[in-house]
Amino acid sequence: MKKLEGKVAIITGGSSGIGLATAKRFVEEGAHVVITGRREKELKEAAASFKRNVTTVVGDVSRLEDLDRLYAVVKEKHGHIDVLFANAGAGTIAPLAVATEAHFDQTFDVNVKGMFFTVQKALPLFKDGGSIILNSSVSNVLGLPGFTAYAASKAAVRNFARGWALELKDRKIRVNSMSPGAIDTPALATTTGLTAEQAEQAVAQFTTQIPMGRRGMPEEIAAAVAFLASDESSYITGVDLAVDGGMAQV
Image 1 (spheres, rainbow, N blue to C red):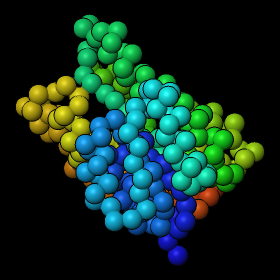
Image 2 (image 1 turned 180 degrees about the horizontal axis):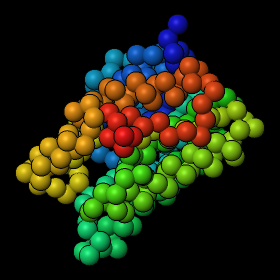
Image 3 (image 1 turned 45 degrees about the vertical axis):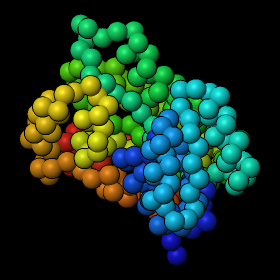
Image 4 (image 1 turned 180 degrees about the vertical axis):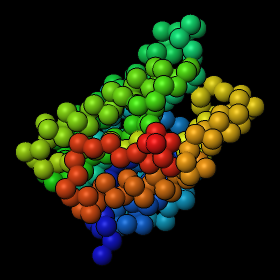
């Protein structure tokens, strides 16, 4: 029996990196997956890598009308939700002295506002006994110069898991956050604002901070998310599961 056989799972930010790896793992475990992302081209490419059980919806989680459209598709196609992996996030480098209002707003619009309403608007479709997994970050407990708005936004995500685990306990919906460390995805070089040289330096620095001596792979994060989504974690709620090679643990 597959861990997610017949389950309906939603993944935001599902067109690349951790989201895409998790979508593939969910399908392997028997789930019907709906993935959303802002870039239509990447979504189409992602969809082409699946042979079954995936639906794509273009949308930006910081736009409430896009979330409404996402859940309208889910309702029409599946009628309910069993699992939500609220994965979409954004993070660009901006030291305190030069950070702009636009930088701050974009970070919090996606990572905090987007996360909040992604979950809120999913609730009417959620089956009792379901699982919600929020993508936080080890930055929620680390000081990261240049990424303080991002780190603060991820600390907010950690607290969402605490509060929502209590708010939704009567429906037996479990809510947990999952905190990746340094993961080998294109995001470091393509979305953070670092130059190629700076990205290489960051990888080298991260490696010295990780007891396991390497970055994690998206598939390793996907395995942890699949665990939290499945009945194997039936007595786990409100936690923050760090998947970081020990980076923020020792």
